[in-house]
Image (cartoon, rainbow, N blue to C red):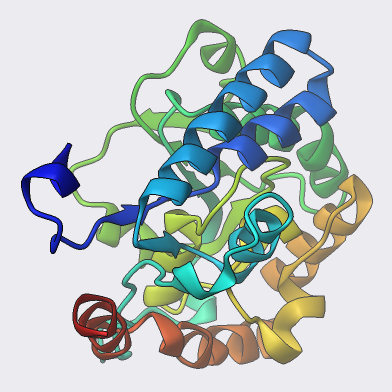
Length: 269
């Protein structure tokens, strides 16, 4: 329709994330056939958009590689991720000794967040609490559902929406995001890194980020390993400081300057 009106218009399809992959991963976890059918529906839509576009924007290297399995016009596909600008540490930055608690952030209108919080409360934290019995977890996110509400306790607090998330981040010792399915770049991971807040997440949560030497410190994919990494970063100042100081390097590809150059290249090439 647009091309008919003006053949010179460049059509850009920004995938945001590869919805097919997110839904398929959820199906593989839950074996709900309705999710598989939904995934196939989105694959058709996304491939049709790719076919009609002049340029396709993938948000992560993982999404780009997975898309190549279904859409093999690689010269059309470019990588442009989220913008995450690292905040340099100031005198107001709280040190390891002046922080407490774990933090998870995410809307409960997004199924990967609901699953991650249930997994955190029911499977991971019982192992962590054996070593750190008084450790508190703060869950921030809107649209809390009844099944999430049922998880609340004195040590697992559902804070809902908060006006000043930055203030909470600057007093939190460790961010956690045990995501078991999803796609694209996870904004919550970038936000934690912006504030030099060490985190523990999965391969799914870390997609699109290069954690380098910190991979073995902040990324795990089994219940026991996630619990072990949480315990280590929460109690080991040396590892926490190294992880915190690495955040700026991890975020370098997501800076405003890098993204600006990528967008200009798409427009004018």
